[in-house]
Image 1: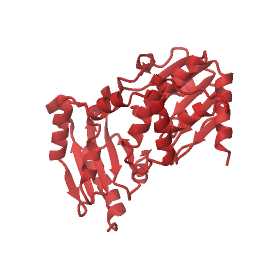
Image 2: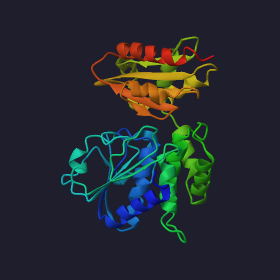
Image 3: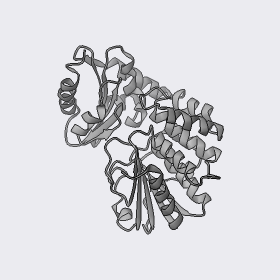
Image 4: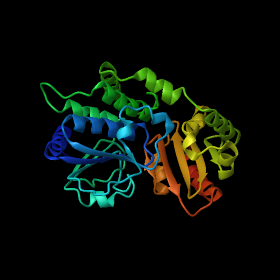
Length: 332
């Protein structure tokens, strides 16, 4: 296995050699994916590179405070996809960022940086560390590895973006991926000027009226199964329409049932216009990424998800229940 520092140096060589960069995270970017995209965009621009940062299809309102967001091309691919270097962040496979083949096929260099447990090595350079709390943790290590004597460290805005990725992927430092290294990186980012107060206020202590109403409806519809080891919430198109809400306004709902003692797995099943999407959370003993993989999804051990087209919300719920039952039935 290649030394991590050697791989980081290969990434720096790709950065040094490249002139025109395309950067993207995964579809429906979360704090880690978008935060890293913005931090890397800023870094490359400081180095005099031309950068096309991309995200699709939408960005949640809770992330619109991030510095540099106006630079992101949301759902708009370049007319002339002529980039010598592509960097994909937190994309466990090359399709995770969306329909990017026109860009990927022309790139001379593809850099893949990820921290998922299951991740394809599809790049010319692959830095995959499943023990890292977040991709933000890896990107900070990339900054640190720029020089032994005088490393190029994040600016305050870059630190804010990276801290956002770190705090969201660790669930405010309560998930099992909150390691000593994650806390070291968090401390360093705060020292570099990360706006911790703003991050916490916007992401965790700001909800719209509709979001709170949607949370209330979701909790009313919560079902407990399998000796209360499994919590399931189904939100239909009718639920969204009644409140004038969208599936994008459900952030945080799936984690609520895991506060109930005995709940091992929580699922939020959403009926959307063209698909059924499912979010999964684990209290700790169950690796929900393995459940998601059953449905061609993925993610982390404690937070994962998947999408299915062509089936009703009830069909998906029934299939998921059978899989979850096999996982939790023997848990004492």
